[in-house]
Structure formats: C-alpha cells, structure tokens
Image 1 (cartoon, one colour):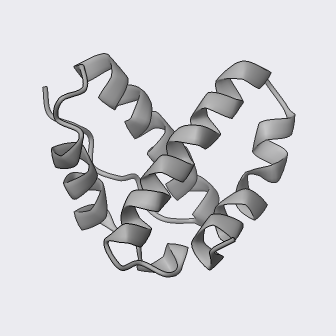
Image 2 (cartoon, one colour):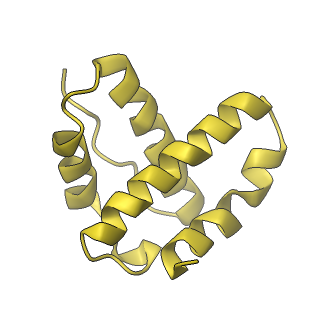
Length: 93
C-alpha cells in the first residue's frame, strides 16, 4: 500500500463509519481515485497535493457529466477538509 493511500484511509476511517454508509463508501472510492491520479502524477504524500492536481483531474475526466464531476468535487473537498487544506477549486460547467 502506498503512503498516499494509507494517509487517506487513516483520515477517512471515522468519516466512513458514520452517516449514510453507501454514500460514504462512494465518496471514499472517489477520494482514492483522485489520490491514485495524483500518485501517477508524482505526488507521494497528501501534503504535496494542491489545486493544480484538482484542475488536472477535472481536465482528465472531462468526458464525465457535470453532476458526476461535481460528486467527485464533493469527495475531494471532504478530503481537503479532513486534511486541513482550504477548499479545492470547483469544476466549471
């Protein structure tokens, strides 16, 4: 398991346990997809991920519909919130 994935799993442990279970699991999958994209782009730790990665992720997934990309934004925003970062940029329509 990579350092980045491990950091995300530790941060989201309590998040996934409470609330609507199906939605939380979907959000975790989206967070992991985003961090895998960032890892492939060269990020090793969560602290290395920033707004540039988020914008590149949106560009990479431009084939997805806006509601789907917005759901990915919500997952990334929650990940940023859990890690103490400021809110990521929103996707454009």
